[in-house]
Amino acid sequence: MIYLRKNFSLTSLLLLLLVGGFTNCTKDKKTPVAVIPPVVVPPVVVTPVVMVGTPIENYGKLQVQGNKLLDKNNKPVQLRGMSLFWSQWIGKYYNAEAIKWLTDDWRCTVVRAAMGVGIPEDGYLKYPEREKQKVIDVVDAAIKEGIYVIIDWHDHTAEQNTEASKKFFSEMAEKYGDKPNVIYEIYNEPLNVSWNTVIKPYSEAVIASIRAKDPDNLIICGTGNWSQRVNEAASNPINDPNVAYTLHFYAATHKQSLRDDAIKALAKNVAIFVTEFGTSEASGDGFLDKAETNTWFAFLDEHKISWCNWSLADKSEVSAALKPGASATGGWANSSLSESGIFIRDYLRVKNPAK
Image (cartoon, rainbow, N blue to C red):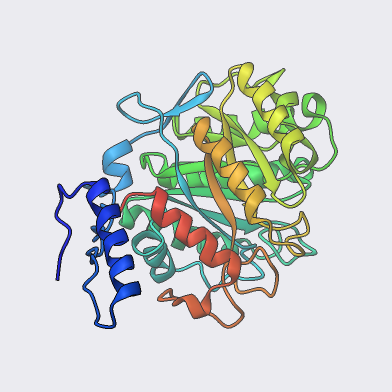
């Protein structure tokens, strides 16, 4: 039997095969043919990115500079994580165990406590202590885990509740103003109202109440039309050195035209934070658009824009990350995750470093 060696020539191989072929045609006995050993390809080893220390230990206090969010070392930082659902409707995930699981298993560097506000929705205005305590539970858990946490005034008509908002954020700033973990989102999604005459005056009033207690933690301001008119806000920004502006999108609905508006806002030297986005249509349901979500991810990575995915909920809708009945305290196997949840968790684990 003849075997090929590393230096065996192609010409020799062809001659060998030809000779073997003619021999087989003229003789009955079997003639050995060349045997090519299989090529062994070594396995590709992917080395996970490992973070020494927590996100807070590594990044510290966040500061806006131009259109970027910088860490304590003046380097651009991009946070990625999950937004919880309206607190009054799916509040069972507002607990330390769930936040720990999001930190350790999903590798979230930020979570968002979406405190529902409205009276008809049984939110903070109706049950202030109950809903506030849910936020406190999440904030305390995030501080313990060393990640960032957004305190979100989850309202669509916040300008009608300015005094209540000022009171709430004043309390939060007094309680957490010395914690670099805390980010204040003072207006989730304004409706189709003017930035100049409605949203900006409201924002300035609430920011003043925060700054009286907390002079420098990051504040995020909502923008018009469900937090999509970030370019409008960029044309007349808030006079505060550590403010970013909200951009929300749902991938199956909002596409290149919204990214174009974001680019215009960035060109005006303001920072953007995507505090909420969905993989679905704007309804939170419908089509799961992974391709468009990946296009958005590439855009957000390119511009170092931080984000939270909507939502950590076990609601029966496409954008919810969990299946109905998923445990309130984490430990979720893939069988407890929705298709969107699996997609987002996988992405977080690839992009965010392990501790």
